[in-house]
Amino acid sequence: MFEARLTNGSILKKLLEALKDLVTDANIDCSADGLSIQAMDSSHVSLCAVALRADGFDHFRCDHNQSLGFNSVNLGKILKCADNSDVISLKAQDDGDALTLMFESPNQERISDFELKLMDIDADHLGIPETECATSLGPTVVISMSPDVPVVVEYPIEEIGHIKYYLAPKIDDADE
Amino acid sequence: MLWVDQHRPKSLAGLSFHGPLTARLSAMGSSAELPHLLFYGPTGGGKKTRCSALLRAVYGPGVDKLRLDSRSFTTPSKRTLAINLIASAHHIELTPSDAGIYDRLVVNEVIKEMASHQAIGGKRGFKVVVLNDVDRLSKQAQAGLRRTMERYTSSCRLILLCSNQSKVIEPLRSRCLGIRVPAPTVDEISSVLTAVGEKEKIAVPPAFAASLARNSGRNLRRALLMLEAAAVNSAALTAQTQVVKTDWEQYIETLAREITQEQSPAKLLVAREKLYELLINCIPATVILKSLAFHLMQNIDDDLRHEIISAASFYERRLCTGSKEIFHLEAFVAKFMSEYKRYLTNMFL
Image (tube, rainbow over all chains, first blue to last red; front, side):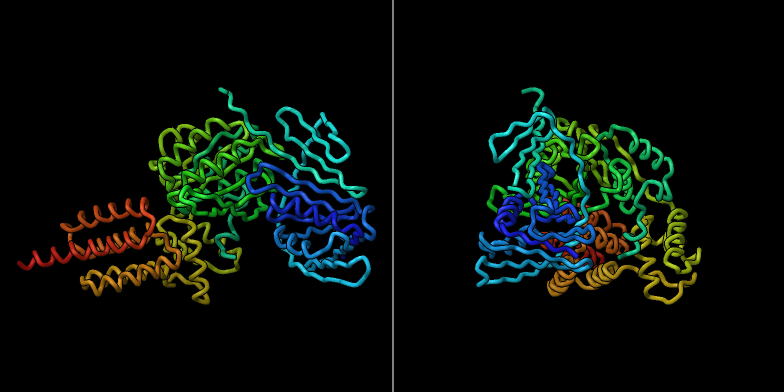
């Protein structure tokens, strides 16, 4: 059984907006520590890794480690129906095939219920070596670059986690 | 799931024939370096199976977790085409010749983009791109591929699969290590059929297995499909069980017989219907043309045979360069009808 409640629903909205142009399908991996998403785009040029810690949610419960496969276009359409101020709750049964989303407006006058059928996506988790040179461009983004290693662009999300983009370096032409 | 896919060996250890080849592939899988590879050999011999098993040896079981993706790109004539690709976390597999006459675009844009970026994550420093049916690629696409292979070797290894090496241009062949996967012998096919029968708890008499193996033309995939069809059709398999030919083959045989019996515009229309029926059922046009030509040849005299064969090869070439297949198939039927009619009229003069 997986349940999560997030008062600041706009975090999820913006997260999905950021993901849906890059990846078509991805897995949300839920564990007791929180949620994580790792997905590559179709050309294997970039990798997007999201981590949201359990303690950043108002209510987080995850009994078994689960992978919820979703289509980012569909999930994006559902999340567009939520206001930025809504409280978003996610629920999924252990062996169920659907993810339930509930959007509550802050003054309780509107509650919307959505159910998204999940997909069976088999994906391997990639272990990415840490890069050494990190420069913080300010409070909102950290870029790490090392020669011949993917560029990491990391955006911390307030109090709850981060979203990292890895971009593969292009091979230089030797004769240029 | 079909037996062909269910019992396909997933690792190099599970392969039951072509022992020396398996040993070579294991050595390659365990070494740190992997060259560009070209697997060639007749269809149904196990090229794709060995390619996947090799990838498993290189990257581990993660390669079995596959997803289907689709990439779209625009042609200069503003048409948008989508090409399907299968990917795991470590490799991408696609068939660029599916784009037809736009395969050059697929090679120059899609494959070049994949190849020119380094691999993200993963234990090896390179990713693998598997290309199917490279012998169906146009010459320009193959030329584009050659530059890509040369430049981006450090980040991307290509595994090319084809049935006929002669249709792959020489520069591509020289950039790869060629691996020949021959067709299995009749005995090897029989033993595989018996092994699959055991796993499926069906008794396969050796005589039946041998006759199936012979009828499949040394194509293991076909033999397994025929075994499954036979098992579904009859409750128990005996040495006398009929070997059922696939329905499209019987259909083409009937079509050949009908064209030989009557040559007229009305018959041509009937033939058109039948050809459409075959095309709708996803039988590739080249397969239709070849089977039709061979069946027609069996019914006619030696004098006419070489005319028909040269017409068949002419229209087969047209099939590859043209965009609508039905035109060329029908043209071949019309050509056969006119040649045969002329031959018959001359015989009676």
